[in-house]
Length: 184
Image (cartoon, rainbow, N blue to C red; front, side):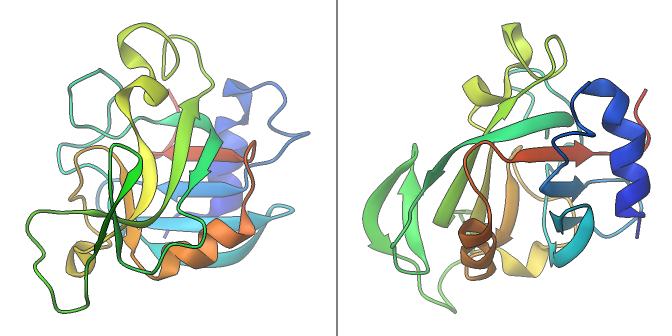
C-alpha cells in the first residue's frame, strides 16, 4: 500500500494551498496495488476502505470511462437519511432499494453520493476534462466483490454500507486527492 502522507506531499505542488487545507480523502488508484480510499484527519489516517476506480484506468477526458486524477473537492453530498441500498440515478433516489444478495449486474449507485468537482484547470476542471460535468462521484455499489480492483465506469465505488461512515465524516468543501502514483 502506498504511504498516504508521501502521496499527498508529492501532489501538493499541484494545488498551492494543499498544505494549508489538507486532503480529507485520498483515493489510491495505482496499478498493481489494492485500490484504497483513506479518510484523513489532520494528515493522519483515520479510516481505510477498499474501493474500485475505473476498469479503463485513469484519465480525465469526457466519455473516457476513466477516473480523473488530481485535486478535487466535495461540492455536494446526496442521500442523507436514505436506507442503505437506496438506488440513485442521475443524482436522485429512484425509490428502489437494493438488498444484500441481490443482482450485481448492472452496477448501481447506492446509499450515498459525494459529488466531486475538479480543482486543476486543464487536468480535471474545464473543457472536456471537467470532473463535475462528467458526473464523477464517490458512491456505494452493489458490486462489493470487485472492491480493491479497477471495475467502475469512472466513479469511485465503495461498499454500499461503508459509504455511510465516510459520508457522515466529511463535509462539502473537503479536499479529495485521487492519486494514481507519483504526479507528472
